[in-house]
Amino acid sequence: RKEVEQDPGPFNVPEGATVAFNCTYSNSASQSFFWYRQDCRKEPKLLMSVYSSGNEDGRFTAQLNRASQYISLLIRDSKLSDSATYLCVVNMNTGFQKLVFGTGTRLLVSP
Amino acid sequence: DAMVIQNPRYQVTQFGKPVTLSCSQTLNHNVMYWYQQKSSQAPKLLFHYYDKDFNNEADTPDNFQSRRPNTSFCFLDIRSPGLGDAAMYLCATSSQQGAEQYFGPGTRLTVT
Image (cartoon, rainbow over all chains, first blue to last red; front, side):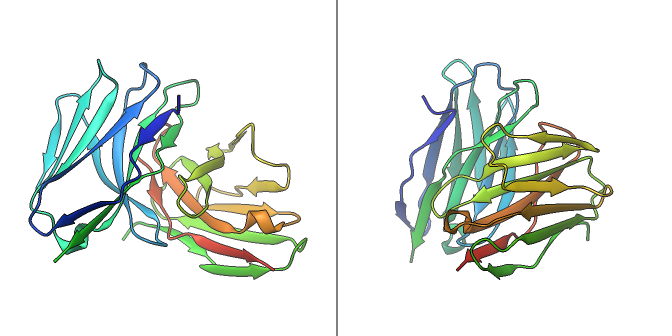
C-alpha cells in the first residue's frame, strides 16, 4: 500500500460546482496533514493544514477521518482559477517527521 | 516579503558535467529540504538539513550532494548528471521537522 494515495483525476467540473477529493494514508500514527496546490510547472503552495476537528477557509473545507485514515478537501463554488493539481501531504511521524506527498489530483474547471 | 529563492530558474547542463543549484531563504527556518520532481509525479525528498545536521534519504544516489554553509543558504550539487536527472528541483523550508513546508519556485534542469 502506498504511504499516501490519491485519485489522479482529472476531475472536470463546470464553474460553480462543488468538488471533493479524498486521500488515504498508511501510517495510523501520522499526526499532521496538509493540502497543497500546484500549478503546472510551478512549485507546490500550501493551501491549508488539516486539523482533527476539520477546518474551513473560504470556499475550501478540509476534513480528517483518523479511524479510516483519510483526509478530504471540498471546494465549493469552483472558479476557473481553481484549476490545478491538489497534493495531499502527510507527516509520517516516523523518527524524522517526514512529509510524504501524494501524486496529486488534477482539477480542471471549465466555463 | 519573507521567501524562498532558487537560482537559476532554468539550468541546462551536459551529460556528466557537474552542476550546482542554489537556494536561499529569508524565513530564518531551521530546516531546509531538497526535492526532485518529475512530470506527473510527487516531489521526492532527496535530503534535508536540520540546522547543520545533514540527513540523506536512503535511496538518494551518491551523485547528489548538498551543502548548507549557513542558515540562509543551501546548495545541491549533482556531480555527474545523467539524462535521468532531468527534473524540477525544489527547495523548501520549515520552522521545525514535520511542520508545513514553504517552497521556492524551483530550478528546471535539462541534461543534454
